Length: 274
Image (tube, rainbow, N blue to C red; front, side, top):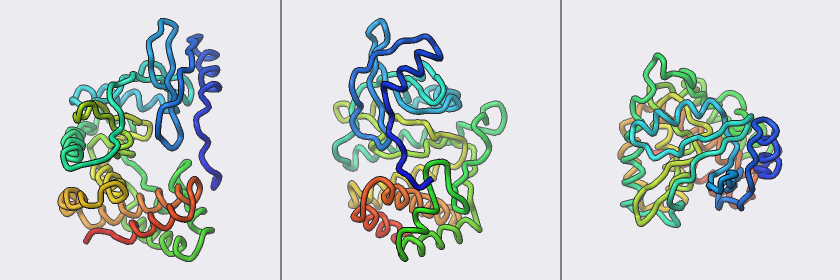
């Protein structure tokens, strides 16, 4: 469980898609960025799309997002653990300023109330935060337990937070990895929100905590824009969501990056807004 997560093998994915669906895609190069990877592919007619790992269940949420005006890519094909999705215009922002962050917050406002109880609650009623047990490939407790005294102390705080709350429940659409690297901009305008693989039904404030951790890395001067919103969050939710992201990023840094990244995320984790 503590091994690094394997990156996408586009050739193996294309072969598996052909075997299961008969559709023969052509590899057209890697997509920039991303921790697990995505690839450009072409359909037999030459149309270019994006291949990534994904869940068929997510495809049920994409139409809900798109109908609300969220620029999410259409899922064109789902085959086992792989999805082929629409290639949207734009690129991830090289830097983040107040205007771009404002656009991210505005589109995130559209997530509110999109998953009311009933027919649209297809992704489950709760998003587990994995504060009391390891998650499925992320939020792994064992890595923090084995690394050093600082990470073991963080793990204790994470588990204590989990005693009060270990879910991000609600009626919102939640992206679960909402940060600038999963957005696209063209000519200064937000054109896409991508990488919906973890999306589900719950409290969209979890996305704001995810975004805040990323802004701490990219543009710390913009943190007040997020802290103003997080100030309205119930203390038990903020503490739990903060513990989730602290666990998630420190675990990932241990398994995929190195000591400097671990040190950085431990410092961010220690800065829970009051």
